[in-house]
Image (cartoon, rainbow, N blue to C red; front, side, top):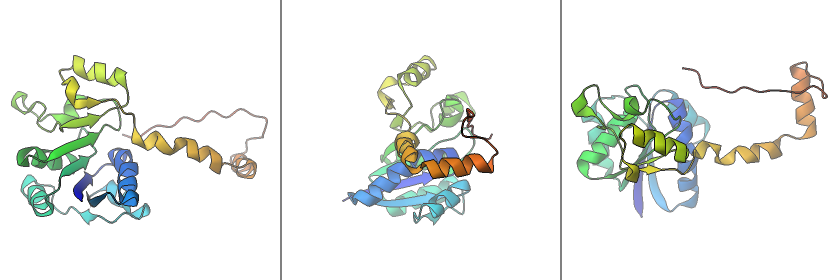
Length: 196
């Protein structure tokens, strides 16, 4: 059985890989271990996914974690800040382990996958990166990313959105509108965003 090590820190990147992890666990087609710190801990806990808390975000600690688990694949999220996702990808690359990341938000490409110097350009780029669509692929290629690494498969977090509709019965809709003082004949516009 293949061994997959998933790692994430920020909420957006964790949500991006959460559905993949849940499917892997439910399908029982791979042995999966999860490493987390920060907001990811709450997300995995609320989703009943066991994880090992990453106590030290340094490369030597994370590299020893990867060496000990010895996975066939490392699955990560990513973020522009210094997060464990980057260290896990780097460890996998240096150890010849396949790496896959999911782009949660189409922005800050170089900050997500490069270090601070020109020599560190694409230092944290995984073997493959799942992106939202072909438009993102074109944008990233224009910024110097290799097309063979970019997979326009969408945002996995959106896979279950259609199922939310079935959860909204007329009673639930009326109750929610009542809580916010919105009558049934008023139009509702919802704006969703991710805090910085």
